[in-house]
Length: 118
Image (spheres, rainbow, N blue to C red):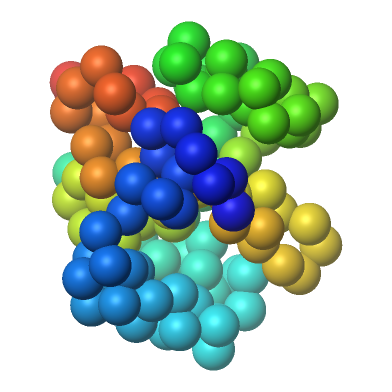
């Protein structure tokens, strides 16, 4: 996981990690990739968890990928934790290499991925 930057693990309050993020990640461990990608919901009833093309990330996110030497990946995978919280990672076969925690999904300029109002 990215150590620094806006969304790195050092930016996650301990309480948030233990009470909110880790239990959700443990739930994902018991699911197949097909089950994860079928989970529907959210504003438009679309997939909660999905790939995001790097070219569609915010400028700050693309810059951070270059800084940590991960700018060669074409996409990240987004796991929805709740309405505005996401975990981003790099899918490598059956594993997800955790990268960032974004508590502001699409809600402000500090988000990894901009969300347009529908």
